[in-house]
Length: 343
Image 1 (cartoon, one colour):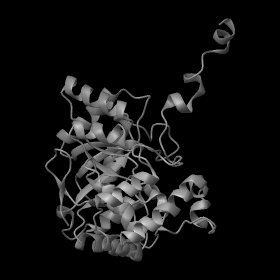
Image 2 (spheres, helix red, strand yellow; image 1 turned 90 degrees about the horizontal axis):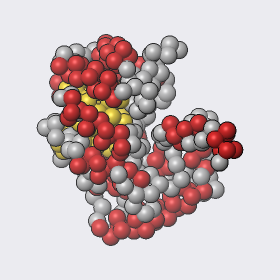
Image 3 (cartoon, helix red, strand yellow; image 1 turned 30 degrees about the vertical axis):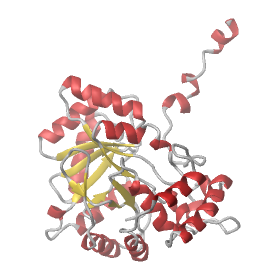
Image 4 (tube, helix red, strand yellow; image 1 turned 60 degrees about the horizontal axis):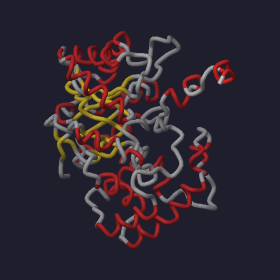
């Protein structure tokens, strides 16, 4: 694989990053099989692994830790995340100093290592001052437990605010962002990716296969994947997304590749993208993904993709897409009723 530099960190990573969300109760419950998948990815040249404390309640981190025993840890760029709830306690979540310090220690224990190369905030926390969060993360870097810090699914405005705060206060800067990005989900091309490029941040994009919709398994008129439907993902039955898939399939065929390979090649073609996350649940899925690792798209194919999904736009929305509080909380976008009546 041709390695890329992760932003301006100087760290070299593979264009495919092995996502570990499907290892454990959420996906593949066979730990030995998961370890074999990880080892095969590493042997193929993938040197970047991304997990999170919340994946299967910490089980994913434990599996990754098992796979990296025996000398493999030193050759892997290891990333994990914190923020999402890890218990009923309201303080076992978020981006506070209180939680991040404990969450990292818990992750290091499960991973069986004394440091992670990249520690990421899984989502923004509007109730926490970004200076508080950056101060805590800076201390973790200085303690040698973290090499670099990053974010995941942050709006462009919050990325900029964090960069300014870090500069003013002499704190560690976020060096990476992990946004959703696929042929069907291109809105980050409008602001997030350009902002990351401007500040020298690396990006590892999640869901380049649009939660599996860009594998060709989801077609108009075919039964919905029952496993995913049971989890309440509505976008799998979205007519606009299914229509786009039908238009992309012949483009992939004429380019001489599968839809999966077309989607992955598209994701890593953007100059603002460092790595694209792959999340295989089985060895067969990993083999298929690795088979297309060296494929590239010519300008004509990229132009045809632009004709199906315009740059900077989403085809409807992923159910997991992040919305800021002014969108999710009516009180932040509506004047009090008394004020409206007086007007």
